[in-house]
Length: 96
Image 1 (cartoon, rainbow, N blue to C red):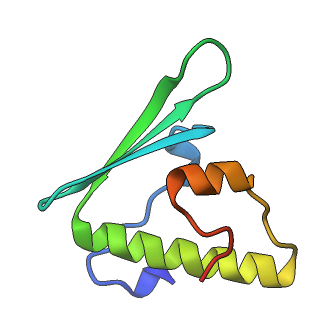
Image 2 (cartoon, rainbow, N blue to C red):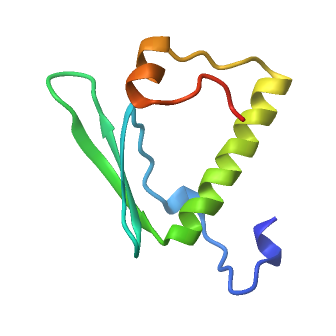
């Protein structure tokens, strides 16, 4: 899919750092977004990676994740999140 994007440079995924996160923080402004990934296990939350992007890329990411989650839940199984967490974050419990 990415081979056909103008200006796309292939990369070796084996050379990229690999992170696991179980916590996330989003920050957005008029000129850019930042996603902070962290580990909440153990005492406190520890930051493991930050990804910065344009508002346009953030919207593309949002749409791609929404599409992938919808397909996953249709093919495999709905992903349950605790109602209390959804309420606390003001989120729906299903992918639109």
